[in-house]
Structures are given as structure tokens and as C-alpha cells.
Length: 254
Image 1 (cartoon, one colour):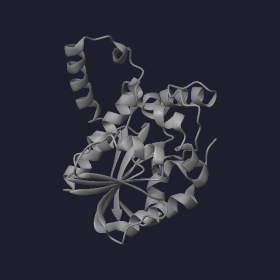
Image 2 (tube, one colour):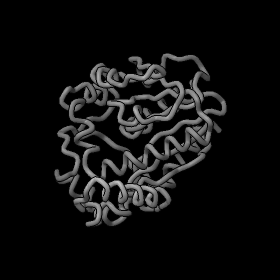
Image 3 (cartoon, rainbow, N blue to C red):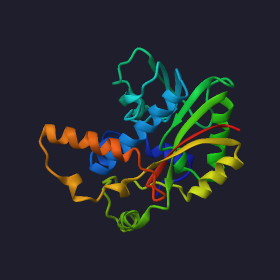
Image 4 (cartoon, one colour):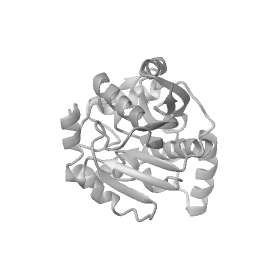
């Protein structure tokens, strides 16, 4: 299992992982659903807080990046292989730089919004605190930070998923296993408060709602799929469950 700054950095420089990252994690229904909900909550926070400029830490392959609704964008990643992937995003208002999330090459109070997905969760508390402090250093006084957190209150179906993952069966086909931090909602709230954050929003990404329902596996034609997706996604965004798979968290400095 990969854990610690050096090992996590090394893992995300592997060409096999970079080439197959999105396919292994977001090509199946659960992955597509997670992506749709995450993106909805991110763009909702950007619009609500009238964000015009954004720093994304560890954009990876750019699966979120390319769908952001933002006027000016800067992405920072430590992986040359991931940065090469990001070069395919051809937007004049988007820029990418190589850098270290633990030592951000920016002055204090530089950004009005920071986005950081699938990074914080890979580190234990001491490293998470260091990342928190760096983000707080470069965020503006009333700026917002958006990130994801994994829930360990997943409900019955989530526990079945986690059991099979532990014994080697998973929807995600990746050979690389990496450390992930799981929270109860109370643990997450306590950690954020103790590190100087005010919580603005915690939205549930909740596959229990329909992940294992037979209706999600129906073979529909193009029009049928469009209708189903429209109704399904609209309704699932309204559902907030304690049995979340993960959360999209929005905070600011307290």
C-alpha cells in the first residue's frame, strides 16, 4: 500500500496508473455518478460565492478541471505525467504549473478559491495539517476551499462494497492500493474546526441511493438514456443522506 508523501508522489508518476486512471475509476456507473455529483456541488459553490479565479491542487488527469465553470484557472501538480495529460485541455484562460502542494509557490492571500480533490484523503493527520496550513496561507481572507472527504458511515450496501474491496474484488481495477482516510461526519467536523476552518457546506455523494438498483443497469437507447439521466441526476442531487459514500466540503478560514 502506498502511503506518505514520497510514496504517493511516486504512485502518481506511474505511466500505467496515469494512462488508466479515469477508465478504472470513472467509466462504470458508480464512478460516473460520483463525478456528476462532485462536479455539480463544486460548480454550485463557485457560482454561489461568485468565484472568478481558482487554484486547483493536484488536478491529475483533469476530469474535473475541464468541466469547471470559471473565468481564470491555475492548476498545480507534482506529476510530469499528469501535467502531460493536462496539456490536452486547450483553454486560453487555463494554466498549469509543476509544484509541491506542501510548499505552494505562491504569495500569501493569493487566491479566492482553492480546489483539492483526491489528495488530502491520502495522508495521515500530520501531513493533512501541513496541507491545510499551506492552503490557508495562500487563500484570501474570505476565500473558499473545496475538497472531498471519504465517509465510513456508508450504510449496509457501502459496507458490502468495502468488504469486497478489502479481499481484492472492486469496481476499480487499479493494481495500486493507496492509503485513504475515512471519517464519521463528527470526526470530519471536529478536524476542520480544530484546524481553523469555518464550514460552509458538506454535501453528500451518495451511491446508496441507486447504485445497486437494477434500473441503473437498463440498456436504454440514446433518448431513453438522456431522459433517465436528466430525471435521475436532478433528483439525486436533492437527496442528503447520513449514509454518504463521500462528501464535497466547502470551508473558509474561521
